[in-house]
Amino acid sequence: MNMLKQREPLLALMVVVLVLLVGLRAPVFLSMQSLANLLTDSTLLVMLALTQMLVIVTRGIDLSVASTLALSGMVAAMLAAANPALPLVFVMLAATLSGLALGLVNGWLIGYLQLPPIVVTLGTMSVYRGLVFVLSGGAWVSAHQMPAGFVAFPLTRLLGLPHLVWIALGALLAMAFVARYTRFGRDLYAIGNAPHCAAYIGIPTAKRLFWTYGLSGLVAGLGGYLWVARYAVAYTEIAYGFEFTVIAACVIGGVSIAGGVGSVLGAMLGALFLSVIGNALPVLQVSPFWQSALTGAVILVAVLLNARGNRHRSRQILPLHKLENLRSAA
Image 1 (tube, helix red, strand yellow):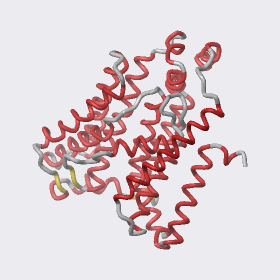
Image 2 (cartoon, rainbow, N blue to C red):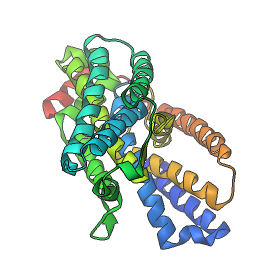
Image 3 (cartoon, rainbow, N blue to C red):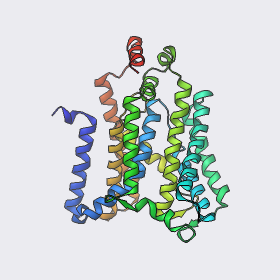
Image 4 (cartoon, rainbow, N blue to C red):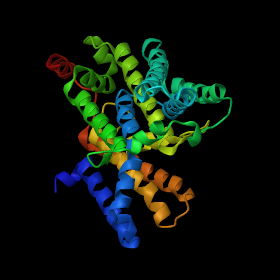
């Protein structure tokens, strides 16, 4: 029973119950093909939620993540269309490095210039989205312009699973390792809990924020290639509004907007929960317009639960001696 009082086991149970309830109404939802599609469809949301979790833990937010994905995806699509013989690894690298560069712009403005994250990323969200139009001239890059290998890679199977799932699993393991076992990850929690104390004991806050937003951009850049290849089209409205779904996944997963609280497992489960809702509505023949309303209602409930949980856990600024112990343990 104690496990059910914790956010992650309870959320995992809710995901399972939701899948079963939808399956009772529409048995096709429980078919292996349907569940496989659900897993594949959730991968990009999971990947972006993982790095967004690290950003939010520092008391920040990255509203530009979907625009970064869109711009990097357009770079990949146009590069592949113009150079069909170019090895796929170079196309993926170009998208990933594009995302990294865009994320580091955010990190520099927020970390070194100490500008508010919500203002910076709200601005870069519009700038990056506008650059998608400038780069493409408003034109689409469609499937027939893309090399076959470019389009096939995300869903090509390796040991029975699509590359998309393997990449998401790799991102999950990497983020779990960073958050739990590295000085970088522990510093992010210290910054989120007590930024002034973190600076006092020598944590390089500006540097940590610089690379945290860079990491968010890097994963969004890779996601840009995977998105346009998965759906075989690149256009100016790629992933429009997707940043709010990513943030919602984190909030539902128990990541505190106030900073300092959050887990990789929680972010992943929050993403899975939203993916189940998104995949269930068409099966239940419910209007997609209800998805926004349901997502908003779930976010409000999650915020209430977070606030209640924070009162019980008394998430306070860590005493200085505990922060020093945290630093020395690194």
